[in-house]
Amino acid sequence: DTAVSQTPKYLVTQMGNDKSIKCEQNLGHDTMYWYKQDSKKFLKIMFSYNNKELIINETVPNRFSPKSPDKAHLNLHINSLELGDSAVYFCASSLRTSNYGYTFGSGTRLTVV
Amino acid sequence: SQQGEEDPQALSIQEGENATMNCSYKTSINNLQWYRQNSGRGLVHLILIRSNEREKHSGRLRVTLDTSKKSSSLLITASRAADTASYFCAPLNSGNTPLVFGKGTRLSVIA
Image (cartoon, rainbow over all chains, first blue to last red; front, side):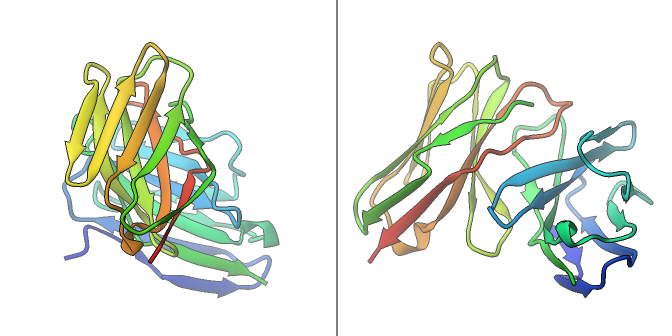
């Protein structure tokens, strides 16, 4: 059983399109995250979310929005895709009160053409 | 949370040698975590050390923490080719803020 699963693994789309990336965790964690890793391998936090609080990195364009239908899912919606959005997007989860660290998904490679 | 700064940026060693990576941070922490990322994969949590701990071991990994110097080190003993990866440290200020990662240390272990 995959602990944190993301779909799709690869996504190629044209500029201007709207797309979603799904993330699900089966660990019973209460907090989920989205990170963006650019071509230089720099990993940047985009969102942190649990059922009480959404923390948004203020540098993230409002074309990006997280949607959480329940505690086990945090999907990422991206509107009006731009070339600069091309990157690998990682979902992660954690239990806020624990000391076991984050569990990451395997990533979604988004290519905007 | 604050970002840790890993040093060196890149490290190349022979199989069987030890690898040491360092991490510095700026303000007080609750704990500090180390992660590994193999090429094309997600990060994997390696070890967490609390602010009141000075050293922690997990298999071939040894992590130290010096809160007076605001620094940590990760030692991998008897390295293997499979240890080739990028390693990231992540200092955590509190449980309510997400981890922030630096640029990492790229370790290459040559067989």
